[in-house]
Length: 187
Image 1 (tube, one colour):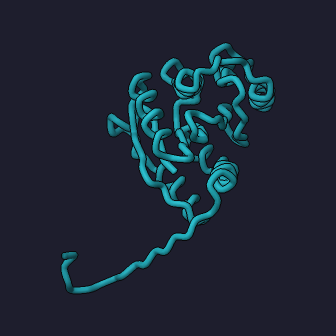
Image 2 (tube, rainbow, N blue to C red):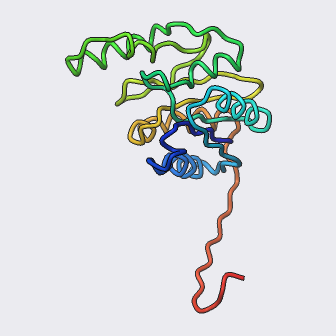
Image 3 (cartoon, one colour):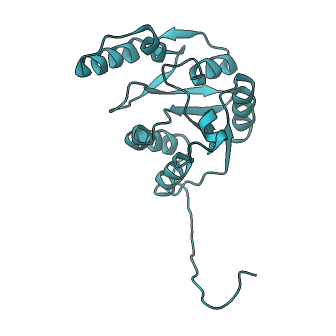
């Protein structure tokens, strides 16, 4: 499993990346370890290059961030480009947004509808608390699973992300031995 974390806020130091830890801990409960992670800013080339690199070496790539309504949210566009799929309006993602807006007394705006534009053939990953759904799609031999960067939303989505990952690669065997010492150096 590899992680691709996106966002200028992660690169500038404004936001500390706690999401990769959340993902790793959730996967570890299934005896699956993260082998590699890449963090990039909101740059289409960096995102594409990172995804291509990770898909070449991992069975599952989890992308965190970049699914929101703003212009710098590029994950769906980038996954569509790398997988050579068209971006299409996903009916269930649109329905999710309609319900989300209705519960809050908001009008469904064009910027919100951007979140329903997903790569053709993508399966939804439910987001029970936020506006941006995640999605899963086969890309260059790897299962790519996406989630929004809001920590609470990611946490709510982790059970499904873990289920998809376990279904793809099975549970592993992980042994962790922690030694606590006193009075001796690390070396």
